[in-house]
Image (cartoon, rainbow, N blue to C red; front, side):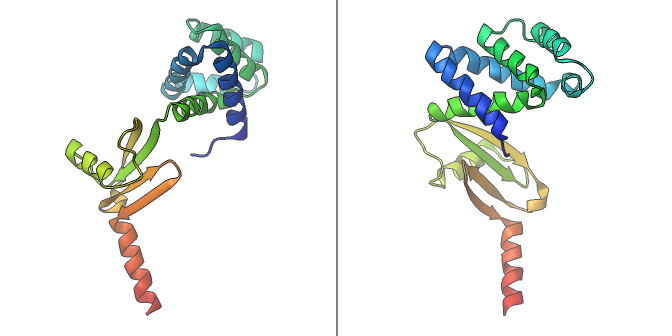
Length: 179
C-alpha cells in the first residue's frame, strides 16, 4: 500500500518529537489504537470525511473519543484535523507505527496463499526463504486468494517471491506463444 507524502511527513515529525521527549512507546501504543478505531468505526470515518462539519466540532468529537490519550497524541490529532487532513489520520498513525517498527528491527511480511495454511506450513515457507531473517521479529499479514490457484506469494519489505501456480501457468503460456 502506498503511503501519502502527507502521512509520511506527519509521522516523521511525530517520531522526531517523541524521540526527543521520550514518549515513543506511549504514542506507539496510542497510534495502534487510532488505527484500530479508524478501521472498526465506519461512522467515525464518515464523520471525519463530511466536509460541511467544521474543524472545531471534529476536534471536540476527537477529544471525546481519544480522551485517555497522551497530550502528544491528542495534539497530533487536533493538528491533523485543524489542517483539514483528518482523512489521513489512519495513514499517519500507521506510518508512525511502521517507522517505530523499522527502528526496532521488525520485519513486515505479507503472505498470500490459495487456501488457509497450517502453522507447520507457514513456518516451512518462512524458513525456506532467505528474505525472512530468522533472528528478527516480524509482523505477518496472511491473505487467502483462491485465484492464485496454489503456491504462495511472499512479500517482505520491498522484495517479493511469487511461487504461485497462476504465475507459473502464465509463464508456460508465454513460453508457448514465443515458440
